[in-house]
Image 1 (cartoon, rainbow, N blue to C red):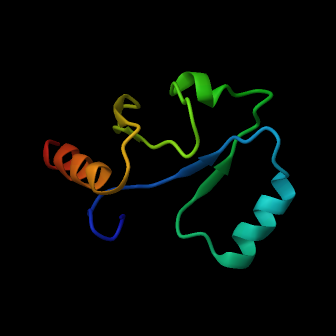
Image 2 (cartoon, rainbow, N blue to C red):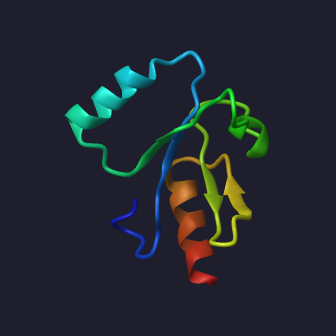
Length: 89
């Protein structure tokens, strides 16, 4: 999606408390992640509550000021909403 929308920065945040962080790091390294991936320390960060995440995967569009613009969109609906939000800048 980043290729289709100039100026869009995408970051993936993994906050699966049950997951094996080292296994995920190795997978990302071996497979060349297409975008930055942040592995949250769920003991210190409550990302799920901050972004009102109710299921996984969950998408959130955050503007440069850190405000949530869109959330819980998928597929073409997400693509169209992001294009519209980016055009409004």
